[in-house]
Image (tube, rainbow over all chains, first blue to last red):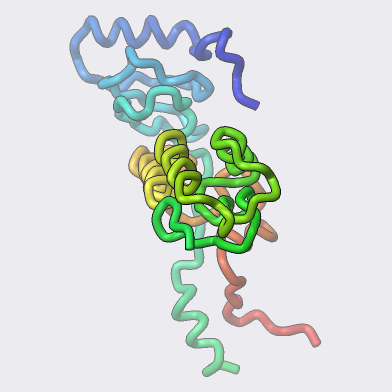
Length: 97
Length: 124
């Protein structure tokens, strides 16, 4: 279920402070955060965050389109495995059988 | 023959039903249009006067996004997610279920027909 509008977007408070500080310092360095649950706010646009995915900090360059999404959406926690040789395997099978 | 919103030519049927042949108009919107234009439930498409057809056409043009425009809008929304690099976008790119369904089994609508695994023996 979607979050009630009257509550406003959820953000961990310390992110605002962190973002402000990095804005003030002017250097464009990665802000490491663990708060994957926080909504991306308009004041984060242009900053680069390192969003923790349980193993490392995935750099996320926040653009205007990302507003309203959560940080966690941009830092996948699972590695995707696929069968890369699927097509070859399918072709090889009749020959082997 | 009634042409409403592009290529749709449903005839012989009741107006409420026929309007649903348009992509983007379902039971609810069809009913809405009919009440707005003032067409009784039982009226069939071929019994409509030209003026009524025109009114329906106007009502759809004014209030609804249908057919090509709607498809384009949906495709644009999906493209936005994919370009953004967010989780939902990644799922769309891999054509896997987007809303957290299981993929161990099922999910055949998104994944397509099951592919055979190489080297797996059939149990007889």
